[in-house]
Amino acid sequence: MRLVSVTDPEVPFDAMVRNLFMHVGHKPADGFVLSDLHVPAPGISGDDAKPVDLGNDVQEEWIVPRGAQEEITTPISDVGLHRNFAKLRTADDILQFASEWGYLGVSTLLHRPDLPGSVVPGEQLHRWRKEIRDMHALVALQDMLRGRDLAELSRFVIWREGGVYMEYFVIERDDGLALDERAPWEDVLASGDSVSEGGKARLVGGNLAEIASRTREPETFARLDPLDPLGATGIYLSREVNRRLRMRASPQVLPIRGGEWRLVLPTLRDLMWLQFMWELTPGSGITYCLYCGKQIEGGSQARQYCGNTCRGSAKRDRDRAAAAYQLIVDS
Ligand SMILES: [Zn+2]
Image (cartoon, rainbow, N blue to C red; front, side, top):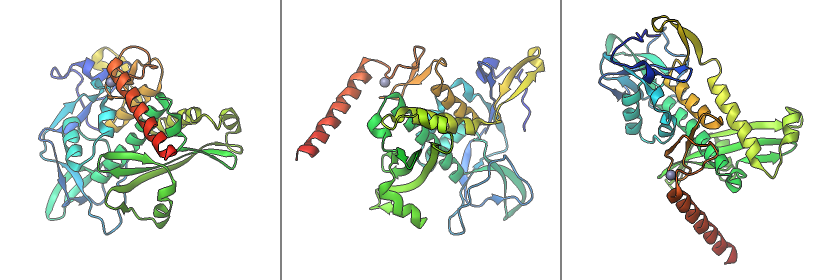
């Protein structure tokens, strides 16, 4: 845990807090670079997030600081950061985001076997990608929920044998990450490989979670309607964000601020999941346009579009999709 003076005149206190929450991040002043020369230093650890085990035949890549000098970041002032994070695709995108906003909070202490004595905190590129996929999937589901997109959600909210489940795969296509339903990938997952389909799409993740069943949480199960995936999706999203934020913020007194207290979030990752939680909670006043993705300032959480232009464009897209579907059905 690094110490930060909250009286640093360079960093206004307002930029570090939002409502009761406070977060101060760190980044290397000269940014991050990718390294495949570093390996975890024996016997010492970093944050509690373990690196993903890639097996023996995959090259580990680490995001490591370019220099020793660090700077403070105040990402809490940007409430839409988690949505930008969810859009990151290439290693360059990730390096650029990290160089601006700092450590995600999945650091491991690394060294270079060829340069004894140098230990640096580094973050596994793969670990970043996993977190990006998770955020991407949950943001996509949240947008389907807000758009009341029953057809899309019904692909992922599955009812069977007295239970309701959230099932999706995350695939990487040329135009970015997307959610896909179970069927085409079932054999691929069973074989344990990640696989490309004509080089066009790559399976990069997936999820299978029970939301409720007759035997587990029967009261919740009884309240859910098989024809309406919205309720089940809402429960799933709340659980996922709660799970990630459990034990992550702690109350701290700020003696320099005359004994004020705040809920302090230790890492950028925690902060971005909090930002996602704000989207789910009515009354936070934070929501995003379902068409352009821009944050809608103020107003009600029920608002779906930033204005008439986006509302019109979204309707045009829907009509076009419906017409295309009709063509397929008719032919
Ligand atoms: Zn818009």
